[in-house]
Amino acid sequence: MKRFFGARARRVAALCAVALAACALTACAAGDEPARNLAAQTGDDATATVTFFSPMEKANPDAENTARTASDLTIAMAEEQLGVTLAYRTYTAEDYQDKTYDEVCLDRVRADQDDLYLMNPDAMVALGKEGRLADLSGLSCVQNLREVVKVANTVDGKLVGIPQEVVAYGLFVNKDIFDECKLELPNTPEEFLECCRVLKEKGYDTPLGANRWWLETFVFAQAYADMYNGGDVVAEVAALNAGEARYSDYMRPGFEFLKQLMDAGYIDAENALVSEAFEGAGEGVDFMAGNTPMVMAYWGAANTDTAYGNPSFNMQVIGFPSAKGQMPVVSMTGYSVAAGAENLQGALDVMDVILSDEALKVYAETNRVISPSMNVQVDCVEPLRPLSEKVEADTYVLATNAGMDVEQWGNVCLVVRDLLGGASVDECMAKLDALQDAAA
Image 1: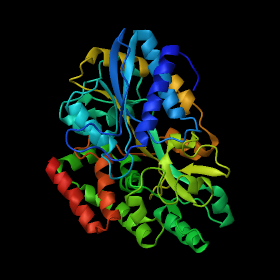
Image 2: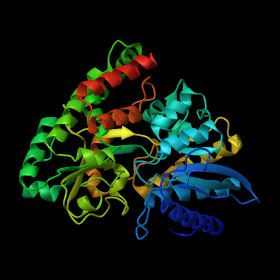
Image 3: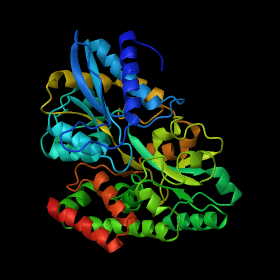
Image 4: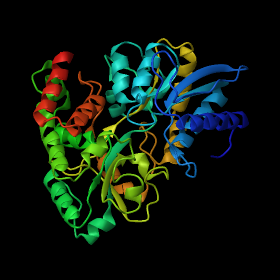
C-alpha cells in the first residue's frame, strides 16, 4: 500500500500486526470475555476520535488487498479534511463455529460500543427497525446516489446505510474448461444443470465450488427475475408485505434447483455447510488452479489477488441462470452510524467525506467497481464485462430490498443452510412462511 499520510501509515501497520495475531486465535470467548478474534486500535489522543468497526478478512500476506486499500484511501481523506482520527476495531471469524461478523456487529451496536460501522444488509435492516441507526438522508452526498441505492438502504422511511460500492454477484466461469467440453455458457436453470452433467462426466467431480454464504444467489436470480425486470416492483412488494403473496411461492423453484445440484453431487453440500467464503470445496486455490469449472463470488473478487484476480485461464463472470437468462444479483454492504454513537456528529461528518463523489471516484478507480454515485463511472476488468453489460442495462435482481418486511439476504442464506443440512424443500418453504407471518 502506498504511503500518503505518515501517522496513518503507522496506525495501519500497527493494526495489521494486531489483526494477524488475532487470526492465529480460534473461537470467540464465551460469557462476558472479549471476543478473541477482535482487534482494537486506539486513536490519537491529540485529535478527536471516531471509532470504526469493520471486518478483517483472512488474507494472504503476499497479496495486496486492494479493497482495504481503497477504503483506507477514503478514510485518510476524511482524517485530513476533518482533523479527526479513525480508530479501527475489527473482527475475523476463524471458522463456522465462531460468532459471525453480523452477530458481533449486532451486539456492539446495541451496546453503543462504536460510532461508525461497516454493515451487512441483514444486520442493517434489523438494527434500522430497532431504531438504532442514524438517519443519513441529510448528508450532502445523498443527492448523488443512484435510486436503487436509496431503495435498498431505506428502513421505515429512514436512509440508514450507504455503500461505497454496489456489489454485483455473479458466476465465475473457467471458459477454457467450457470450451474443452464444448459447452456454451448457461442462460437458464435447465442449461446450467446440463452443463454440470457434462462437466461431471468429463471428470470434474465438483462442477460448482460453494460455501455457506452465497448459494442463495441462485435462489434470488430465479425468484425475482420477473419482478425486477419488467414487473411492478412496488405492487409486488406491497402484496408480499400484506401477505397477499408468499415468498415461498417466489423461492420454491430456486430451492428445488439447489436440491437438484445437491442430489446430483454438483456441489459438495456437506463441505459447503461448514465452509467460509473462498474456502469451500472447489473454491479459492482449486478454482485458480483450473480444477473447478465454476464458483460464485462478488464483483470485486475479480479485481484482487486475495480472491480471483489475474487467473491463468480465460475467466468470464456471468449472471446466474434464470427464466430471463443470465441474471446478476445485487447486494449492498454499507456504512452506518449508530444512533447512540458517542461521537455522532463526527461519524456523520466522516460519512459525508468518504461517500462524496471525490472519495467514491478514488474508491471506484482503485477497486474498479460499480459506484453508488450517479456521477462516477469506471471501466471494469475484461472478465467482468458480461456481468457489467447486464448491470449497466439495468438487468439484475436486487437481493437487499429494505422495503420488504422480511429481510432477504440474511434470512434466505440461513434457510439455504437448512437445505444443505438435510432439510426438505417443503420444510424450507415452511420456514419462509413462518418468517413472513411473523413480520405481518
